[in-house]
Length: 421
Image (tube, rainbow, N blue to C red; front, side, top):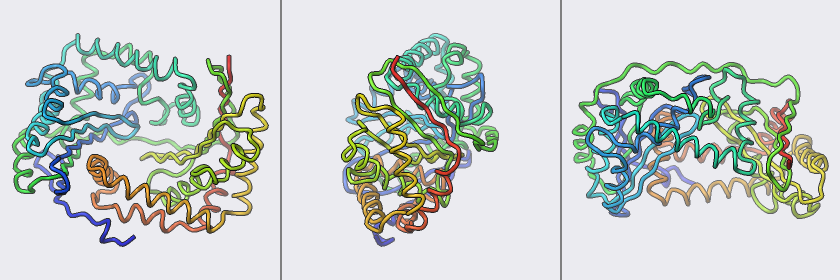
């Protein structure tokens, strides 16, 4: 695909307080999408003080100096818009999509909670959201079938002092100990304009939008510099096997290898490898385990690319009556086939075409497009990286896929077995 088709025009500038701003004009629909990233995720936390990044995804909707509790939702929805937020290991984002004539409203709401959130913070609000987060943890992790799997993987494959060791939602004992001063300190350190990136996309005028951003965000004071994250070495010297009993009907097996982080030269070949293994019904693991041998209920493979480190993960659920070791042998038979013999040109082309089509299709959604611009600005410093990103996959070769399979999948790994109680 040509660079011209994936090239976007944009305006990027920085306010005196350090807030990065990217404006992207698209007149396709009379909508505007506002997307604000704070460069803080669970990786910025530490043992004993986990879960703060996720807590703020909740607290930021609990009101600020000029906006009452839950009114952020009410204002946007009454204007015909939608909104939400999300937290990951590496960042927290908040976003609204609404009719373009209501851009002022979205910017006012975001700026009020960036600059004046603490003025609306109370112990009662914190206690309420602590209960909400603890209940969310019970429902989505502790009482969900296989719900503790990712927590078990990350906490065992990364050492205690690694920033990816703890779950994004936090440990329950840490959530219970949240106090008002800790919350204020976290906000003052990370929720500052110089630690944020704002993208506005849609039916906008550059000059008008620039003035609106300066009006609502320009007077918010700059914060202190954020501490650098220390990342210890990540390497296994031997295979680690964990068994966890859960309230499930079928066992499930997870294999996890240390791999490449986001945008690393091995990241795209690992993505293609995962697609070759499990991307379609005709992929290696799907075809062999699910359809031919009929020993797997489902099987998944993917490359998880974080900002600080990456993991390559294969997950398989056996059909009733199939021993987990039988499934394990079948998985490694297919992995070893790729390691020793490589993949075919047809497999490579299918993976590339699938990636390309899903990538292009996703860009038809304004909200996704604006979030992706913020993603590129955060990780690469260049909002217009759509062609560069897709080209990473286009440049993958058969040899590169076999090379990453040998490089990573022959190393010691973490094996997690979830078994019925």
